[in-house]
Every structure is written in structure tokens, then in C-alpha cells.
Image (cartoon, rainbow, N blue to C red; front, top):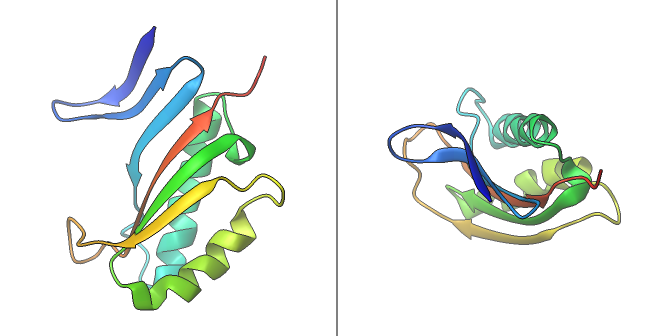
Length: 116
């Protein structure tokens, strides 16, 4: 059964299917630097996963969108400190035009729910 959470007329924040969680892109536009936005976005992802029965050890795939690839090293410093060693997911990182000029990073994830 497919379950959808946190929706509006355009999308849902999380879709669950067969023990998998598909999360919409997460951002943290309040941050003034790439490091602040990366940390804020990853914090939001961690809370979202916990709310739906998962955690960062169960992330299967992450897609990172950076407004400017010149921030790749600064982003990776924050990301690498956040991931749990031996539990890294697959990851793609691309440069992308963002929805607003304030957003420097957006991350989408697919995660498995924790086993009961």
C-alpha cells in the first residue's frame, strides 16, 4: 500500500511504499552560507526520517543539488561529518538552478524504514 504524508495540491513531503520512504527535496534557506544551509538541510532530513520510522543509517540514496559547484568542498565537509561511517548511501551531486536565489542546496533522499 502506498501512503502519502504532508501533502498539498502539488506534492507530498514523504511517500511510503513497501518499507521505503521517498522524501521531497529539503532545503534550509535561513542559512547565510553553504555550510549553514547544508547543516540545516541535513538536520531537517534527520528529523523527517525519525518522524517516519527511519534514520540516517537507513538512507539508501541521496541526490544533492548545489546552486554553485564551487561550494562542493564546503558542502562535503558538512555532509561527511553528518553521515554515519559504514552507512553511507549512494549519492549524486549536481549543479542546479534553484527555486529562489536564497537556496544554495537541496537534497532528496530515499530511505528504508527501520525493521521492527
